[in-house]
Image (cartoon, rainbow, N blue to C red; front, side, top):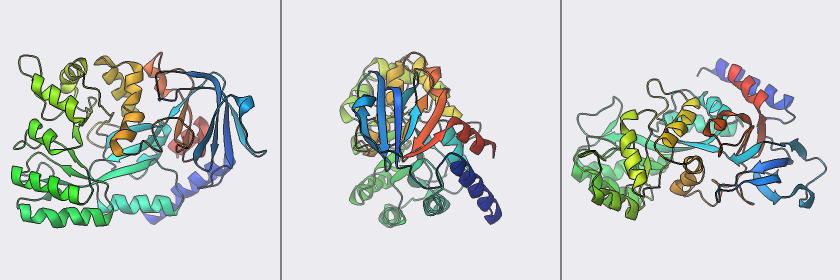
Length: 379
């Protein structure tokens, strides 16, 4: 993005924030959602006609309005008939445009996992922070690591296990959050990646390399498997031992059915046989998959595979927080958690399509009503 366009974009955001009563990066002293139905995601329940107090970017209080304490300058939002949830997460995105941040926020997404990190992503994230530009939290892998022939131009190609230690150490120094493995890695290189990533306290995520196989990937401690890679149908079923290993190991799966619809049968079989550790992702940034809106299509497809509305919501709230090790501050509506929230006009537990009825979003304590989000999208 050129300097002039950045300046214009930031000015637009600044003006929209001022019109809403707060300046860029300024956290309203207190926000109180009054008469709201809270879906805390701690259990399948709705706390009817509750109030939630947000202060300094955190959830200060949850309870009945008359029992809560807040300051005189608090912004009171009458949310009668609306539903408040933890912000949504898209656990498989490819950020190709810095302005995707607005598209994510407009669809209630307050956390994304970027699955092919590049230096420009780290620079852009630093700019967002330095210039107080509203954005979802970004968890990013390092460069995609592959063997030969590489599936994608620009991949980090490693064929010699001796090269792995330096590459992983540099990812740690650069500030990436995880290591992504891909299809054509050799088994010796994969095993060395697992070892060196552990030494650097970096989780390994990604595809299941062809030479590795699903069983070895799970047993090696790969934290998440993307697109259900490595799971195969044989006589219209998945090997029972693989299903059992999946459950016992606690490995996470990010199905991205919206990008891989041919995997829906596998997802249904895994779910019906007791696999529950799923996170929702879309592969946005690839081909026709659009930032923001595609996550809600993924919800529908997860539901079609058998997950209940509550279980689908788990894949975008509590499960991602647990997978990333963020469960102490994200994923549920509880006192002390980060104030990343989405306010809906209707109950998504009754109809998942209601996840698109977004009345507003709170990101780190800053309230963005629907009109402001739309203005940001328009610009």
